[in-house]
Image (cartoon, rainbow, N blue to C red; front, side):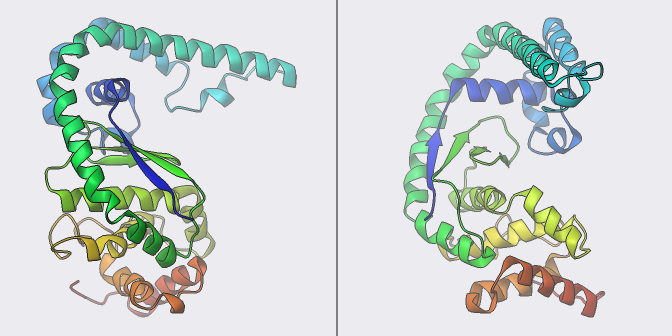
Length: 292
């Protein structure tokens, strides 16, 4: 089974990321320095960062810096499980109400942006969906074979978001910036799909178990994506498609391991075996130079 990749253009999803990019300082470093790091967009709409919105984002911080930690720290004076339920419901309701205030404050200002953005985003989404559907079965099947991981989801939703700097993946959803070159967009989407197939919680646990550096996780994911998509792009060697040694940790040493899984999948009997081969490669060739 492979999942159906579904594409969406949503005003309110775009509004959320519009706010997240403008107020990226209130998000984690991983997010603010990553897919929210669209400095040109932030500068263009700096005037929309009203004092009221600043106050609302500040008020969120007392509940949670991240999306989930209120579920623990709000329980400091709780003694019974029934009380836990009451406090969590109350706290989550307060967080939701603040977000509703944020949207209410921002939506009128955002309306003219969306009026200009929506037609182009919908046109792009329609064109890219046609391109993607022609290769989707091959890409997703090969990805599963290379990683030795089954797909567990029937659907994955891809939301096109105009203001993002790159993309971001969760379990069932991907937020994806429109990129003018279709082949680069295919690779970008493949990378995020690989994250859903081999999620961080799974991959980093495996890396810890065999004492491999956690920074290798992003490299492994990108190589899985690359070998899944390379037959469906015009130039698989070009920048933006082939993993760069300047960006991906130890990619020169991991490349031949994943290349073997691509060329001879029967040799890679499990994901654990792939990681063991990576361990051997890094141990036997700690300082080897290889241009990929």
